[in-house]
Amino acid sequence: MIAVRYFAAAADAAGTTAESLEPGTLAEVLAAMAERHGERLAEVVTRCSLLLDGAKVSDPETPVAANAKLDVLPPFAGG
Image 1 (cartoon, one colour):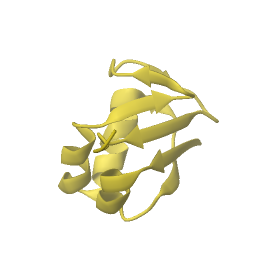
Image 2 (spheres, rainbow, N blue to C red):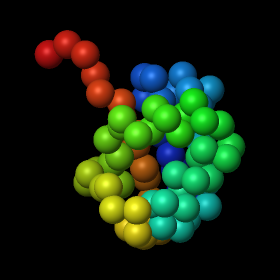
Image 3 (spheres, rainbow, N blue to C red):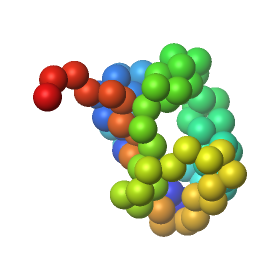
Image 4 (tube, rainbow, N blue to C red):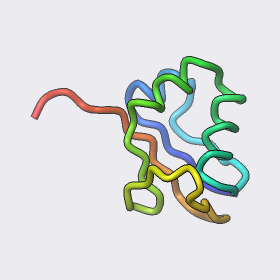
């Protein structure tokens, strides 16, 4: 399993701050998230930064291995 953490608007759209999902490619993980939580989360994720074990990822073919941590971070206001 992988650990997914949702922040701010992503947590709102997912209805949770964390969950476990099956490993796979980034595209497969994002598809699983959308299937589980619906179009609202899928739309929010398009504006998010994704951090895989602390490193930014965007390539849909990036492997997300078992025991990885994926953070879903919407843009934050302020500064």
